[in-house]
Amino acid sequence: MDTWQSPGRLQIIRQIQQTQQWDMLVIGGGITGVGVAREAARQGLNVLLLEQKDFAWGTSSRSSKMVHGGLRYLASGNLKLTSHSVKERERLMNEAPGLVDLMAYSWPHYKGQFPGPKIFALLLALYDKFAGQKYRHFIDKDKALYQLPGLSEDGLMGATRFADAVTDDSRLVMRVLNEAHNDGAVSLNYCQVDSMIKENDHVNGVIASDQVTGERYEIQAKVVVSATGAWADKFRNQMGQASKIRPLRGSHLMIPNWRLPCAQSITLKHPVDGRSMFIYPWEGMTVVGTTDLDNPEMSSMEPSIQASEVDYLLTAANHLFPNSNLVKHDIVATFAGVRPIVSGGALNPSSEKRDHSIWDDEGLVTVSGGKLTTFRLIALDVLKAAAKYLPHVNYHDHGQRIFSEATSGSEYFKLLDAQWQRRLLGFYGQQIDGVCECAKEEGWALVPGTQTFWAQLRFAARMEAVVNLDDLLLRRTRIGLCVPDGGAQFEEKIKHICQQEMHWDEDQWQAQWQAYQATWQRYYYLPAAS
Ligand SMILES: Cc1cc2nc3c(=O)[nH]c(=O)nc-3n(C[C@H](O)[C@H](O)[C@H](O)COP(=O)(O)OP(=O)(O)OC[C@H]3O[C@@H](n4cnc5c(N)ncnc54)[C@H](O)[C@@H]3O)c2cc1C
View 1 (tube, rainbow, N blue to C red):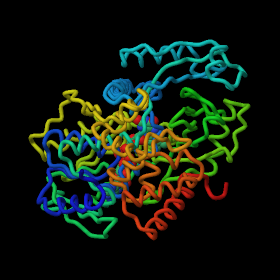
View 2 (view 1 turned 90 degrees about the vertical axis):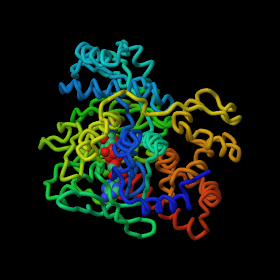
View 3 (view 1 turned 180 degrees about the vertical axis):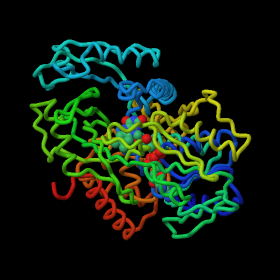
């Protein structure tokens, strides 16, 4: 069984060093980069993807996790983006049940608030038309209070029910990356691209540095794709182009479900500035999000929530659920991501468009903006732009499946209830039997307080390119977001698994544990002053 752990990583590096020229080199291991790698590899292109930190370390593990049409695009008249997004949502739900699942949404209507039930129903009629399914219906005040217990009754007229989908964005990235691997793509995390190699005014490779070993590599490619999201200006600036990206931070609170019970996603308007927000269930927790603020500093430091954002989000939750009396002490964890917005110069951050853009600068094809939901369509657009350098590439949408069908023959799989089988198949696809192998050692015991099996943690440590502990606890699994103190109470058990699977000695473990705790405290909890 090959693994991404040593010697897996060394083998990948050897392959990189031995390959004279790649057809395509993709920079960035977020959803856009892995989507491009997936679509390019299926056409037989020789593809290498490099990620400076961990896969999904950027925005693609910090989104609001909604695979959605985006009502805001519809409201702003962007019918094309909405229609594409709704269709992609349906495709993803069909192809990856358990990873992308339908979630009920409610929009409570209060007297004097826009949009009222009638206008909202009109918007949703279009939304449902794009999906080819009717999800919308109005519920009266009594039903709304029954289905959304604790909701503010003051001026409540009822609520509109509709549907969108929810995912785990990190797992979505890993699943798409696995599909790219199945078609021959090669990927390496913790390998930062520093600069372009140019010959005759044409980009034909990159210089990259391995963040684990410190080694530098010169890598040749027919075309280089920068899928670096909010960091996209860096290489375009090196090519003499002006900055285009306006990084906008959005932050979220993770609250225990018993403190703010919610069985469906609730769309609300913030009581102070009227911005749309969500409160929704995810991984057994309740998430309150999000904000929309300029985040001009795009260094390699992780974005994190600011004290004013904590207050802003708590204010909204307490306004809608007045008896919940949420306080900072109730917050288990936080996460913040940076939207890669291609700026149109709007004064109000929330008025900026969310579409993606593509630029070609002498063989460096840059893509930025867009959404998680539409990654497949964005990838096809990138192939179209790259076709100039790869004449045989086919960028037409033939509607091929993103995800291969997967089943498990493992006896251990059969021990699971249908609901868990569905979830694990969605998360791991064709790798499911590897997880079941780990269940031989761990059984199907859940990490207490989470929806994650210890077997999943062991599988990630064994097979999923984990380099640092935060890769394991914040992205391959979400233990660090769902358990108080980032999971400190499970230190001994996590250490045991890491030492068995990754052969960390005591010193390595101590260094990893301390680094993880510092990261969690600084970027995934509350700001120091609050
Ligand atoms: C708060 C928030 C909520 C959102 N909610 C939703 C939602 O609910 N639904 C939805 O569809 N979309 C949502 N989005 C949008 C969506 O998350 C993003 O559009 C998407 O994740 C961007 O993916 P990406 O791959 O382009 O960028 P990223 O995920 O940021 O990936 C870029 C990667 O490039 C790497 N990189 C950068 N420089 C280098 C280098 N020099 N060398 C190597 N690697 C490099 C970075 O480390 C990073 O991992 C949300 C965004 C935010 C911020």
